[in-house]
Length: 377
Image (cartoon, rainbow, N blue to C red; front, side):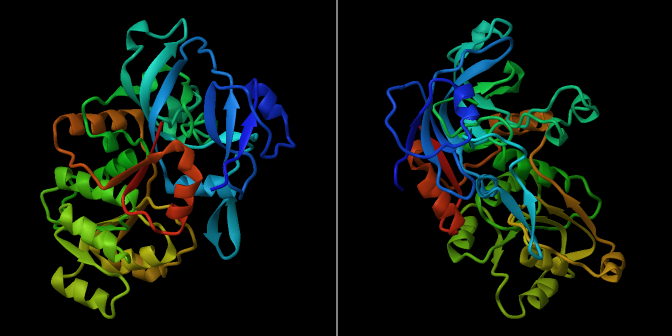
């Protein structure tokens, strides 16, 4: 990746510059960010003054930030809805903007209204921060807030050396749990999706579709949350092999001839619970074809596209389909408690330098990544 650099003395000055382009030499050596300066274009390295925490704000020195498929949608400026339609993901953001929402690091500085005893402590950052005033926020569902302050989505995030967090209450202790448990997108999304299948009266078996970062985290968590053997499905042979080594009982290739017929025979009618961690038309078609009568499908993947289902098939099969993404602060705490209890197995993960962010975005986009990429400072 070509290295681009922009120097800014203040974030406000950078945001005010609508004609940003990569280039120039900076003498500022404070906060370095891998920033989006133009949609559907490579990230640039930008440099800004270290922000001073105000009120209850907390400045976190970033040690690691996970790379997520949703970062690709934000970089593109849209998500594919299928049929030539697109969902705008710019959300009115002003460039340059810093992506990255799976953040873990050390508290460097706090505002006057934040607790002082957290300075120097390792923390995972819950990024799904709401306005704090709407009905969703007041109900504890900040991840549903329409006027949100999501880190790396609505406000500057974790592809940087530091990040400013609005309040210390969004920091979670994670030392010494596995670092992949701190991923507040793949971890909490996988946990929340699986949680929606727990304690169902009909739950003989479970299928996980898609073995990217979220899917592999889902495999680890499913073994802690369910007594049944876990079945997986993915087009990538390396991903299936990795899943079998990490606890999956059976791994299917959805592209195999007659695989649906074989699954229905081997499972006595299909799966009572299915989680689609891919989220495209083909993965959903596979989910609907393999779910048992009275079964439930939870969809959390964001690969995009359009899926159609005959209403009669939906009704006759008595299936339930639920969409799910991210989770609440309370669910994040539940996930960390599960990890501290030693019930979460480490998942396949690669650590790569933060300066190579664009390179690994390209690798993820090309489908060359098994497990999760952790960008490190």
